[in-house]
Length: 152
Image (cartoon, rainbow, N blue to C red; front, top):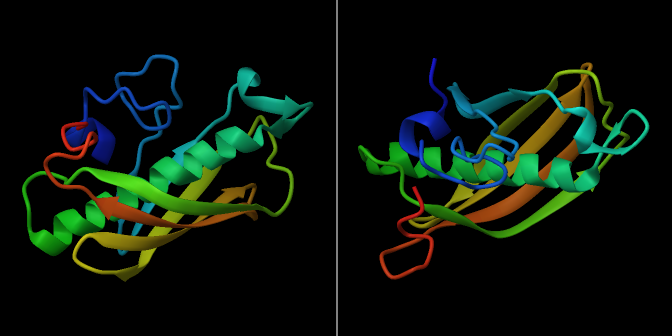
């Protein structure tokens, strides 16, 4: 099954979610009810120190997955055929406990507030059934003229 990224942005080179970035994280987000979900497994070069995923990698995972959650929300809200390009306005990550290497990581995100062009998203990252990080951010659907408008 194709992810949202592979379906709507196959040429994207974004470090976190771009299918065309061979050295990126290449997350794959899928709709599941009112949420987007993603499973991702860290590689040895994603570590901060022995057996722990780097916090910057965690931030990238949560940022990109949340951004796609907002984009998918706008797609459905507008009954559009193409995902509107969205950008991160702000996001705050809380690292609750070390995120272990060598296991599948599970992300879940959903929109908690929205206007015509802004969505506030809350997301969690889980490892082995425990929440290791959370995120809350604001994501904006951009219009023509914005540098990210043609990014998909």
